[in-house]
Image (cartoon, rainbow, N blue to C red; front, side, top):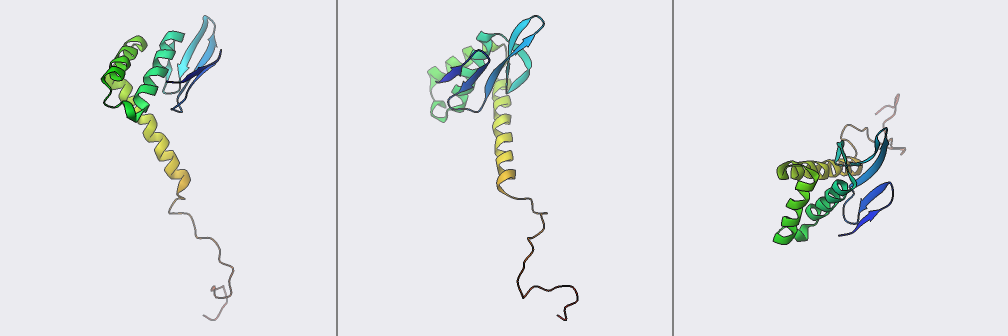
Length: 126
């Protein structure tokens, strides 16, 4: 696992998810890209980043030690296993859908104008 940490940001070496430190009136807390509504401590944010990396690595699907570590990380963050799996899967699905939209133009997009002599133009006798 490779989690890069600065004073204000945690990023993953294998996932696009991140944790961002925010300042509040009462100090600072961390917000996750996949759980932005919950303020976390540094330890919780780090555990959530570890959890994301474990669940994002297809090589660890059948690794019982990694899955046990993931379950421990879920408890540190204070969530439920199924909730975490759903939230991270929804983020992956949203990224895939966004990539599909950006890759394929919408079907309703008009065809480009053809500037060739065979095109029918207004007023032509065709």
